[in-house]
Image (cartoon, rainbow, N blue to C red; front, side, top):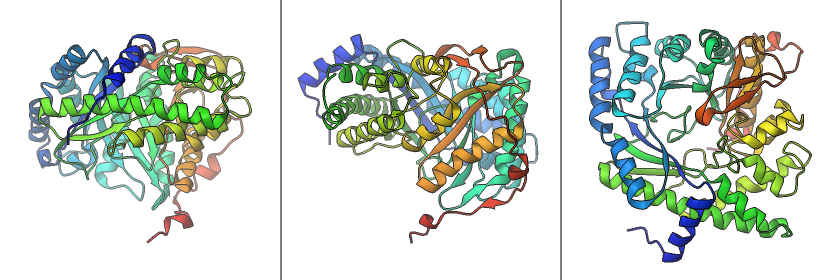
Length: 455
């Protein structure tokens, strides 16, 4: 059934595009690589290159043509692939560096800025392939430009794999050290998940899930600037009315995203998957989730009431988006990355926002502790404990949570690290000085909660 667009919606969308920073943040082509697996790693890598290139060679051209035809900015064109731990496991090698290099090369050749899927799923335990991939992450992220990595260490059904949590603490530290000349930039391309979704179009956590089709087009919309302008128009509205305003705004944003996704699907002859309607901020002024919360009446993001305001925002965005499309998926909510949000940075500078407050906020919004920069001397065990805390929120509440944290080498609280582009500028935040190493080194698995027993 064709998507019907009313002329008034077109006029409203034009205003949002011109005045309110509205864009499609990404169109991401997911590609299945399971048929590229084999015992010869060299042949497997050639198959990977050939398949990705064949499927995605027109992705950027099509995205650019849609931008031109519709006047809708599409900021990123990206690729996600089957978790490489699954593809490489049958190969006669324990060194997965070549797989990272071939992903980087084909991403460059087709013109995308990121390719996700150097990933492993270890929420209930790790296979040989999983362990090989995790071991390869630091070097892979240090020597490639476009490759993104993710590891799922917990689910509501399985509990939390604490052996994997501790190992990821060491992996993050090693990745930071190997990219220390760039402020630990490799860690900005690495996400540790609990309850990871299989259809997420957003980097760095995107991969092509094993339940997905041969190929698919997923779209990630944005729109903090649009929601901010809508909220500012109603300075005296009660919160119920304000929620309705946000719902209607999210509806319009999602309609635009589905239009772009279906058109890309048609032109590329690849099935349309989902619209991820997450509010994804950028460092640009006026494109901030923190600014929305402050426009609701908070003096500074992070003060008392912030979690409640964010809960209302997130819920209204989901309700509005789900009315606009039957194919909402991915993460879908409000992102709160620190370095990528100018308002969040100001809140950290004002001492209004701490890691502990961010952790509380992640209970009610998308993903988790995102683009958090901490002192370079933060231990691997402390990083693992931060991951465990965030995973516990996801596990108990049956939601996706994640950690993307950068222990910036040589930096201390109050310093800054420039990542550039959409990654922004990271203010170095303090961590609790007390030790968690005995706890995280116990290992084993934190059992699934009782609410997992739903069958």
